[in-house]
Structure formats: C-alpha cells, structure tokens
Length: 300
Length: 300
Image 1: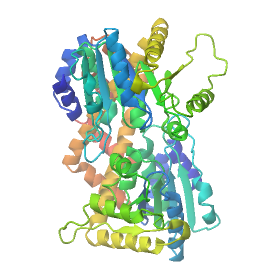
Image 2: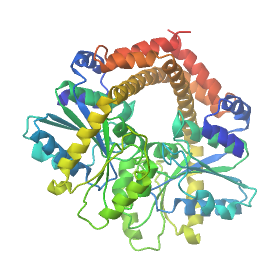
Image 3: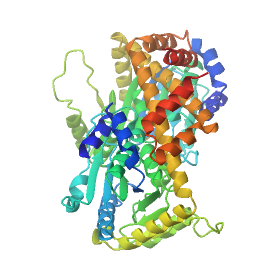
Image 4: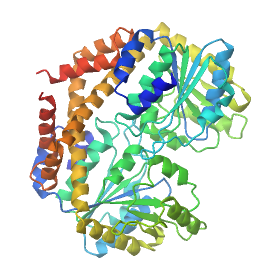
C-alpha cells in the first residue's frame, strides 16, 4: 500500500492500471476530512480518533496531506512521528502525502490515495490537511463528513473565514477546551454559523463538540457526532450524491491533467513558445493564442 | 479601466475582444510582485513605493490580489482605504481584485488585469498579493521583479518556507527595521538564502533591503534595488525570457479554462454524472472515465 501511495505522490503512469484493478474493491470506506489552522491540534485529534475507532473494531486509514513547499517537495511536519503510538497496530495505516510538485497537485492526488486506502479494506479514512490553503480546504470539503477544528484564543476567526474553512464543516470541534476562552470561541462559532437560527426541518445542524484531544476528553462525543452525520446523510441519499460529486471532480481533474500534459508536449515542440513570443511582442492576444493551442491539442 | 478589470474579475466572455484590442498597447509596463505574510507591512510598503515612483515621474498601477473566501467572494481587507493618500493622483491607478469564485481563479485573472494596467499606460505595475497561498506565491513569482517582505519577530520563517515564498525573491525587504530582532531576521534570511556562499560570476545576488515603510525610510534603497534588478535582467535577455514564460503560462491557463468550460457543458448533458455514478459503484475506474470524458470533448 505504501508503494501504491508513492505512485500516487509521484504521478506515475502506472496508476491507470492500478486504479483499474482497485475499482471493484472500493466504496467500503467512510471518509472523514479534518481541517483547521496550524496549532489547533489536528494531529492530536486525529490520533485520538484513531484510538476511538480502533476500540470499536474498525480498521482506520490516515492520510495526512501536507502541501509543504512547492519548490522543495519535502514534508516539513512530523505527523508520522506524532502518530507513532499507532505504528505497531496492523489495523491502522498512516501515510503522509506531499504532492505540490507534480502536475494536477493535491486535487488530483488525494482522491486516488483515499481510493488506495479504501481498496485496502479501511472502514474509515481520516484525511488530515496540514495546510489551510484553498486546495486543502477543498479536499477536506470533499469528505463524506468534514470536521473543522478550532482552539480558544488563537484569533483564527478571520483567517479561517478567509480560507473558507468555516463554511465546510458538518461537525465543529473546539479543541483545547480546558483553556480560557473556550466558551467564547464556541459562542463566536455558534454566532458565525447562525446555529441559533431556525432551520428547515430535516436540515443538518452542525454540532460543536468540545475536546481536549491530548487527554482523550470528548473524543467519544466526536465519534458519536461523526456517526450521527453519517446516519443522517445515508438516510437521505445525500451520501451517494456527495460521492458522485466527488467522483465527478476526480474524473474532471484527471481529464484536465491529461489535457495539460498534451499542452506540455506542445511545449516540447516549441509551438507554445512561439505563441508566447507573439503575445509578448503584442502581435497576438492571449485568447487567440489559446485558440491556436487548443486546435493543436485536438489534432491527431 | 475599472470596468475592464471588473470584466476580468467576473470572467466575462467579452474579455476576448477586449484583450485583442489591448494587445498592441501592451509591453510597456514593468511588473513588480510583492508578497509576504500578513502583518509584514505589504500595503504600507506598496504605498511608499508608489510615492517614490511618482517622485521619479513614472505612472504607477497597483493591483492588490485578494483571494478572500472561495465562498463569499468578497474582499476582507481594506487595501483601498490604506492607499487613500494616492486616490487623487491621476498618475496612480489602484485596484483590488478578488477572484476565487470563478473558473480559472487567480492564475487566470491576474495576468489579464496586469495587461489592462499595462495598456492604460502604466510605467510600473505593483502586484501585491494579500494571501500567502500557493497561487498567490505563483503570481508574485511571475513578475519581472519579485519582492519578498519579512518583518522582525514574526516567527514567519517556517510559514514563509512552507508557502515557497523564500525561493522566489529577486529582492528581499526586512520591513519594520527599527524593531528589535531586525538584525536577527536579516541574518537568518541571509543564511537561509545562502547569500554568504560563492556564486557564479554574473549570477544575481538578491539584496536584503531594510525599510521602515511607515516613515518612508529605506524606500529609495528599495527603488534602487528594483531598478538594479531590472537593469540586470534586461542586459542578459532574462527579462524577455521571463515575459515569454509568463505569456506561455497565461495562454495555457486560458486554454485549460476553455477546456474546463467544455467539460462543464458536458456536466449539463449528464454525461459526467453518468460516468461518476459508474465510478462510485466500482464498475469503472476514474482514468477510464476521464478517457471517455476527453473523447467527448474533442467530438464536434
């Protein structure tokens, strides 16, 4: 499995065959996304959730998506180290993934890595996004259930709002709930989400769960909240719909990446460079140049 | 000009005609990108640079690129307010741009907005990216000269490295240089960039400029550094090469966006949804689905 995920990270051409072989094995895993600003305790919460899931006998995959630097390609954070308590448990699979370097990026790679963990027999896949950029938020939002974490006194309200984090939660967690300001954070969150307002009957009302993940406090409540959201989406057919939307996005990303690759091939034959030179000297506008490029793509 | 940039923000279909008309007027502007973590004083430095450029008689365009929330679409920061001292100067054009919502995003919109300011007769266009995500860094890196700002005591080293900021600077600024820790920040930067090491003759050695932008201190030094980098790139033909690479990226983004739009049209005729349903039930893998999608694209 580690080798398969390395193929995903590297954008290997072999993935086509691998995914064809895995397809019939997929669909069994429930995918939970976890996102939040650095310092809210995402890794600690993920690790505590793994413990709680294992207690119920479920096999757990963890995918820590780390955008890291677009230039160095390396992972800066030691998530694997922090998760070391689960290292010897054969029912737990933990992988970090840093993909910024290659064509298609996280939006392309993350669903395929989830697919590998799914096919390997994980009952639950926890996708922890280390960063808070646009693409990380999109990945977390694509889960069956999205968890947004906050912590008291981090002044992360505006940052979270900017990254679009606050809109995506199915379940919210105020971690480090033993610290000063936990009540204020929960209140502010409640207010920002409009949780006090009336909702249509049958609408999901995202719960706010308080945890002290480092001591395991509140983690069973979080598990309950996740299971409740799962039940709610399954009952209404919303889960199947979410998954179709996720698959559609995945197909689209693979298609666009393939088309980009063909453009890259045109790079090679200098057609794009020639168009670019005409744009810089003002004899061609970029739209007309793009038309010529696309015409070139669809030629045999 | 404000209306043209609104067309860019909104991804208007009229842009095709607009860009064709503007093409012969472009190529005169020198593009300077400014990036750095929130709080380092980007807007203040940009504003001080505008003052310095105006003193030399150059017409200046400012494009403040604000990713804001992918969901709300609105700008959260008041850059236009902070730049108000230039509001009555007819030689200064200031625009904020928030584009996260629409197809193609910042990578698609920013070069076209720069093109509008260029065609309007700006001698210099300052592109200030408000966020520090991947796409903002890419935009700043696409400038003729990229400026990376830091400030003492912000502990932003790791954050900056993660976002890939540190690799892109042609000129570095330690702003708020009157504060404690300015020496340490400059030293750390010098170390991280390997500025003390030997370089090949003719290689550009990025200078570290100290400023207190709020009082205008060091801003003339910054202007000198920018002009020196410009001279260096022009002499070596590196400027023309950068601009061709930028145009190539722009053409590619427009082409990919056009292809994505065609996929969106396929969404409409339910072809993608049908493929997605087959992927979720495991009867088709996402690569085979993408092949069918791309085949659909190139049919008339």
